[in-house]
Length: 128
Image 1 (cartoon, rainbow, N blue to C red):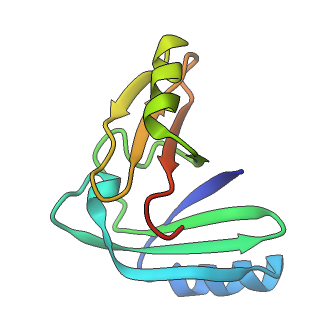
Image 2: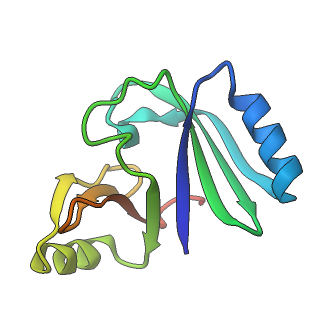
Image 3: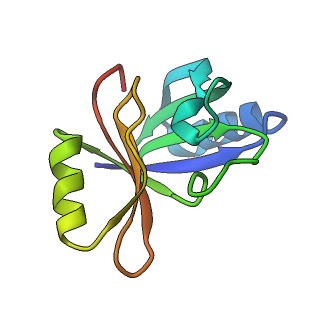
């Protein structure tokens, strides 16, 4: 199941989450105030990552100042796979370009598919 990725500024994050939960009937699965920002292209920093599940699917809320280096922030969707290395190999064989290599603490990569679609792909190494 894909998860939507939403970038929200720190001053609007709590309001966004509250309103989305009220609308969707969802729940916060995790709220990590010091997630490794290496997974969004800012190594040696932290950011707030909120994960929500609802009848609309999964959502990952990235609470940042919006200043993310390319290609981060261009992806709107993430996909969880069983084997990231195998998935990346298949994607490359089909003409996709890996824009960001897997991070070390959580296997995640940014991929651009033929036609220009950019997505984040990850496998489950840590709690999701």
